[in-house]
Length: 178
Image 1 (tube, rainbow, N blue to C red):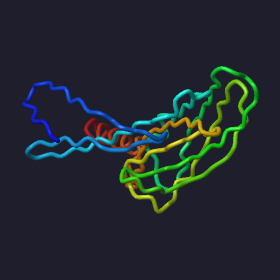
Image 2 (image 1 turned 180 degrees about the horizontal axis):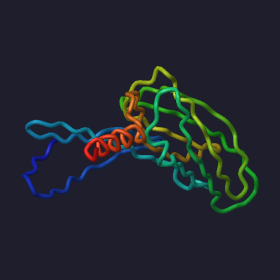
Image 3 (image 1 turned 180 degrees about the vertical axis):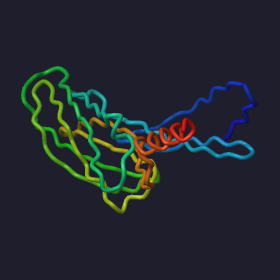
C-alpha cells in the first residue's frame, strides 16, 4: 500500500502488526519523492505474555556507528517481576542486516534473582559491509521469551579526523593573516 502526501501536509498511516511468536520483526518504511527514495529501518520486539522478567538493551551513543572489525559494546539488563527465587535464563544474541541475514550469533546463561546488568561486546566481522544492522537479544526461561533489539550502523569509509580538519582551518586562517 502507498499514500500520497502533498508538501507541508501531515497524514496518519495506520497499520496492524501480527506477531504471534516472540521474536523481533524487521521491516522498513520507504519514503519517496520524484527524485529521492529514503528507507527507514523499523523493528518491533514481541515478548511472551505473562513473562516473569523484563529485558532491556542499550548501545551507547559512541558505538551507534562503528567500522567492520571493531567491537560493538552493548549493555543488557534483566529485571525480575514477581517472585525473587533464583532462576537460570538462556540468553541468545544475534546481529542481523536489514535483509534479515544473520552475521553473528551467540549464546550464554545468566543467573537472575532480582536484576542483573552487564556489558556485552560483539566483535563485528571485518568482512561486514557498510549499512544498518540490528542487535537482537532474547532471554528465555521455559516458554517465556523476552526480546529486545537496537539498530546500529557499520561505516567502512575512512572519515577525516576532526583534528585534521581543525589544523587545516587554522592554517587557512593563519595564511590570510600573514
